[in-house]
Length: 258
Image 1 (cartoon, rainbow, N blue to C red):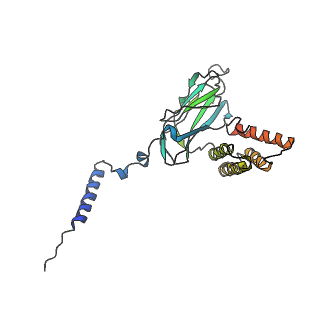
Image 2: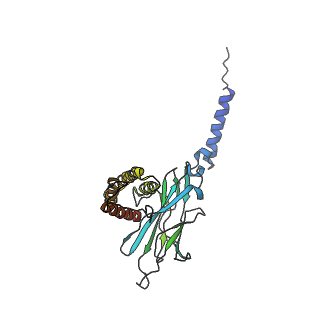
Image 3: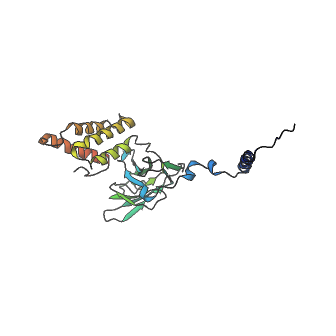
């Protein structure tokens, strides 16, 4: 009795295809499945991003902040490189552009749907050459990396040693801040009876990020929730105004609730 040792045609075809893939990989030719994940993730478009700044902080003659990029779409997208940060005077003219901070690795950042990326921005509070005062902007224009989107924001920066770092995933210098800021902004569009739900979401985000670091803001949000949303006494209304003004400053949303 003879035995047929030939493989079925379908199996031989599969094995041949697998062998060909191994040869291509060994020769330095990558198949689509072997490409980096970001190679198949499209770049973030102008319409994909919501852009907001953080508040500014200062130390040893320097100030700094982060610019937040939220992916407002339902699909991941990528950002890479440096944002364009333009310092703008009160008449709307650009007086300086941020230089590129050196010594930082440039990577392609995948921003998940609803997720965040950010760019750190820093400047000096005095002129490093003369030790005198610097020129300060009235506001800034932000263009996220690899886009043509220009977003004006009410932030005053010095033109002295104004620098921007490459985009990174998340907002590492301000843990919990980005989702809290978003909840604060969304709360301004809700009816007064429902605003407490958004303020509580902001509290939760800040506590998850840094309960100690954001303790004053968490206390102010708790006080807003405790105040009646209607028929406030003059004292209660004064407390509401003080908390709203302070939180609008913290979230860089001047006049949002007024």
